[in-house]
Every structure is written in structure tokens, then in C-alpha cells.
Image (cartoon, rainbow, N blue to C red; front, side, top):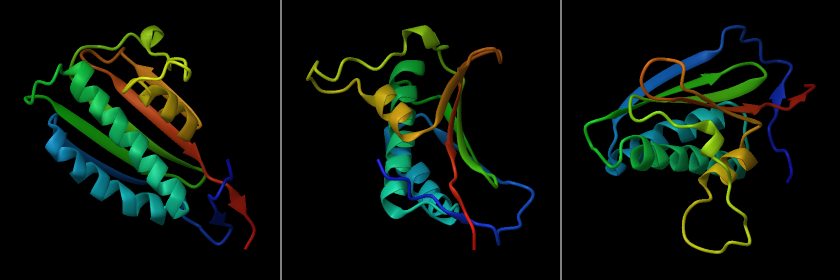
Length: 153
């Protein structure tokens, strides 16, 4: 896979830009996350193809939260925090649903051809780091981190 992420040395931002958005745990609101996230990823310096992959991986993670953490209950929320730092771009997804056991989240064998179940694999392919934190009371904090490639201007 090619790396199309570039940040020039002319970028002097020292404080990362942070945006938080909270949506109901309903599939019909996932477009709000996608629509807000896409321009932020582009602004962070990622190429369009990589931006689409990042947005799709976050969408998959949110779908998994709705399905697994909330069991389809539309009364929950997903808080999305996007941080555009100098050397990395991160997306944190916070739910208040059932805690996930990180040891049970494993991408299934790609030879096992059937619908669904590839979200964890896709997230780990797109992002440089994927972590689950269940130590914060209820729910789970999923952190997805993508490093930026530095280039000289």
C-alpha cells in the first residue's frame, strides 16, 4: 500500500485541532459522522483515496458500536473526537454501551468468505494503531491513530 500522507515543514501548528461530535446510536446518523470527518481528514493532509479508507473504517467502527455495544438500541450515543496533530491524526469513539472484551476482537480468517466480520481487519489495515479502553466506567473508548508522513517543503 502506498503512503499518500504529507505534511510540509511549513505547517507550524503546535496545538492539535480537536473536534468532538456526539450522535445517537442509530445507523441513520452515521452520515453525519462521515460528512464531518471527510473534510477534516483532507485538511489533515491525506490523499482522497486514503481519506475514503479512513472514513470507511470509522464508519465500520461506529456500525460495530451500534450493533455490539448497544445491541441496536437507538437510545445510546457515540461521541467522536477527532484530533489533528502535527505528526498524527486520531479518532476516538466513546460509547456507554456494553464493554467490549478486546481479547475477543480478532479479524476472522480472510479465507472464511461470508458477509460481515471484517471491520476489525479493515481498521487494523487502515490505521497504524487501534486500541480499546474499557477502564473508564461504562462502555468503551476506541482510539484509532494514523501517522502522518513528513516531507520537506
